[in-house]
Each structure stands twice: as structure tokens, then as C-alpha cells.
Image (cartoon, rainbow, N blue to C red; front, side, top):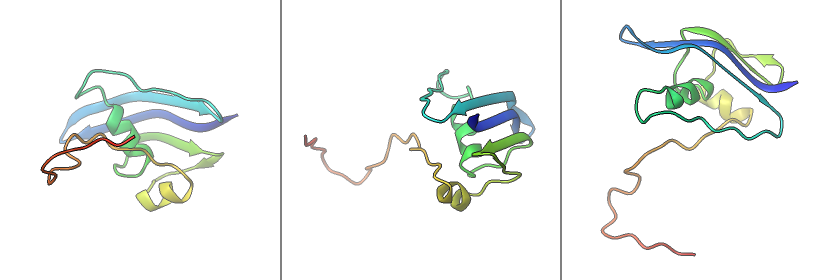
Length: 101
């Protein structure tokens, strides 16, 4: 049984189709990677839909056997879904950076 099923996901922004009929299935214990070009492949958009940042236009999201017609950020956090957003400017105010091991 799949832990996560995202089926036939569609998403548009201002009339521009970003995701068209995208599906992702993940079984418990599996590790997956989303790969694609920088900007425009839809990786972040798909994860933002999963975590409730964006609402999908069409498609279904099922997590742990429960169908989520809409997902909110709070709801995704409550059921244990989270991801680290790609952000190149996390520490804009630092004058210098040191890496500690």
C-alpha cells in the first residue's frame, strides 16, 4: 500500500499551466528524489501542493489512506509532512559565515 498518492495533479498560475497530469506514489520506507531543470520543472510546485502552501486545480492527494480534498500547512505539519524549501538567501544579515563540524 502506498503511504502517499498524488494523482493527476494540475496547477496553473495566471493562466499558465505549470503541472499537467502529474502523479507520484511513495510506499512507506521508500526514498524518492524529484529531478528536473532549475525553474519550470514543477518540483517545488508539487511539494508546495503536498504541504498546503498551494492548492491544486485538479487531482487527488491521499496520505496514509486518507483523501485530502484541500491541504493546509497546519494540516500537513500535523500529519508529519514537511520539506525544506530551497532558499539561497537564508542568512542575508550575516557579515561572514563560518562552518562548524
